[in-house]
Image (cartoon, rainbow, N blue to C red; front, side):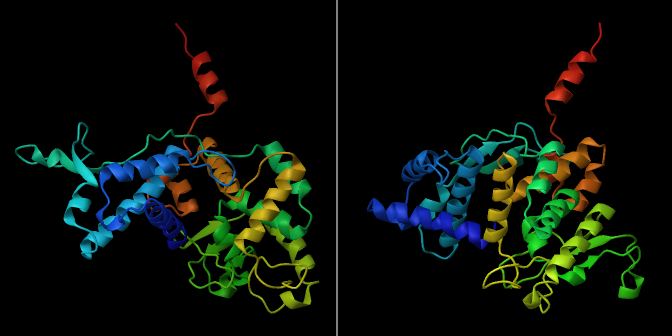
Length: 322
């Protein structure tokens, strides 16, 4: 969990306790249950209630914060002990050793947890993708959409990319790179001036000729902005006082949302990555390959893309014979 996600959740908890005259140093499970209820029933900025997964993300941050404070002696041991309870593992994981008495099957499970409904990731259709490309106002925006859909990069990884990370020639041996074909080097960097960062592992992601061609179109547009010449960031602002400076996440998010509005459907940056992963999986790409392309540390993170759609379910039923 990153600081940008962790801090607001903990602040929410601290403000909630302060507003009710509660001492968070001596918080009890009953009071935490009330806080969980408040999280579940407080609408987001989009006037929607949070999913069980989002509620659990808030509660996980608060619980880990209290445990950290317990290790530092800022909260009592009674508070920390109430955050979890014994739970018997009915189904132990593979290679799990439970000991001679079986007592090892007892683990400490978090007390406060909301039920989660697993939903397939939001994706766009090929038709919507075509509309999105046609609705982009600039070559830069078309390149951003195309790169995200065809490579599965996170928006932070794309915004943090440097021009030197893009090896778009048939061979990059002259650059000291032995990777074959056009590809992108996803590099983890800290302290990017636009706040972008690569969350996952550093890796190499191949790209298609379609992406390379659109990049050339974008370069012609980019080179018409004199202040962009000194920036090594791939994605830069093209107009206004900030022309030539690297694009921020908020700027990119607004651009993508406007593209969706013009195309006639809801569009968010993360939907491009979900779409890429889902297409790969449905086309029969091995989960280990998809995991590597996405930069997931855990295969469990990649498994969410192995979800069936309505056509898959109907095809399965129609194939059943007597």
